[in-house]
Image (cartoon, rainbow, N blue to C red; front, side, top):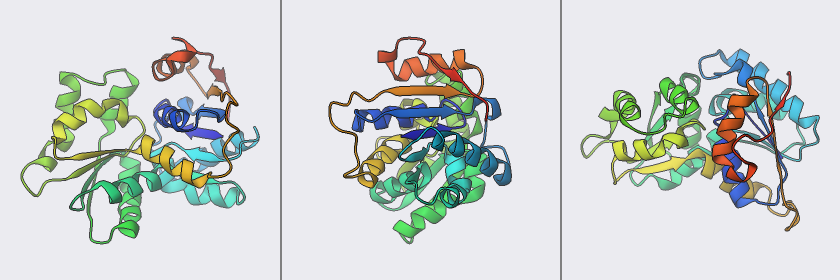
Length: 263
C-alpha cells in the first residue's frame, strides 16, 4: 500500500494505518525536497502529487493514500483519472466524514494549510454529508513548522494556537468540532485540545483515514500474520526524516533506514 505526503506529517497517517491494519506492507514517500505544498498553486501541487503517485504505482502498490490535505484537496481527481483502476483515498474526504459524524451541532472549525482552505474542499465535502453545517476553515501555516521542528506542546505552541484559533471557541456559539486538517497537526493535538476546551470534539484526519481505508479495502486485506513492514522514502534530508519516523515508529529504532529518491 502506498502513502505519500509533502513531508513527514503523513507519518501520522501511516502510524494509524499500521495500528488498524498491522499486516499490510506500507510504502511511504515524503516529498521533503518540494515541501510545503500548502503555500503552492493548485497547478503545482497537482503536478507534484501525480508524480508522487506515479512513483508509488511503479512499485506495485494495491491502493494509494494521499496523506497530504492540500494534495487531497486539489489533486485527487487528477490522480484518480491517471490511475482509474487504483483505489485512492484522500485525507480530506476522510476528515470531512469524521467531522460530519462527530460534530454535535454542526459548528465545525477546520485548522489547515493555506492551500487546503483556499480550495474549500472541506466545506464541499462536509456539505455533501451534512447539509446546513457551518464550516470555518482557518489557515494555520506555522503549525507545520512547529511540528517539523518537534515543538508539539508548551507555551510557544499555545501562543500560536491562540493567535489562529482562540476566538473561534469562545461563547456558546463557538465551534463544537475541530478538524486537524493537516497531517502534521495531530502532533499538536494536546495543545489544541486544551485551547478548544472539553466540550469540543477533535477529529484526527489520520485516524479517520485509517478507519475509512479499512472499509474501502474490506475483503482485500493482507493475510493475517503476514508481518507487515514499512519502507520509508524521502526526496531530501533523509536524516531529519528518519528522526521523525523514529518517534512515530519506535520499533524501527531512533534512526530508521530512509531511502533517497528523485521524482
